[in-house]
Length: 177
View 1 (cartoon, one colour):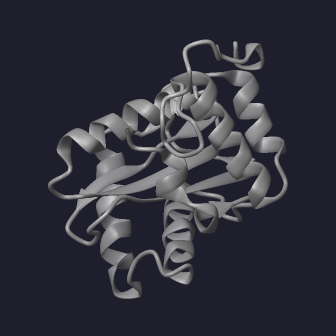
View 2 (cartoon, rainbow, N blue to C red):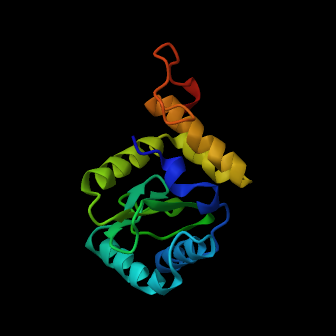
């Protein structure tokens, strides 16, 4: 199973997004991925345009303050992602019109059709719990974000730190329910 923490990594976490618009947020996140050597600088403008084009076809603002901008592209060979938090909120044309505070942007290799859909579903499962979203927006350091993502993957999907399934007797944590 694809693990979100393996795709975003510690270097893909942006605890304080400065952007005030959707376009600025996408660009800022992509620039961060360049600074952390996850994508090439010469691809940023093209990727920004591709993601904005994807957003005009249908917003990835899924509601409850969450957006999951994503595309399949030939600019990456492996899944690449970032998790960013905006404390002020960003207009993302979300389905419930709420400002977006948690953005998970990911880029999928062009041929990764099933993996792309699996990752979308996985992220949606992680971010559907309001208490968890509040924990993300309250988190301070990158390590705290990593712990939150790993804990959610373990509790919701039964995925252990190494990507293995958890033993059946370890049920979900009531904090997320």
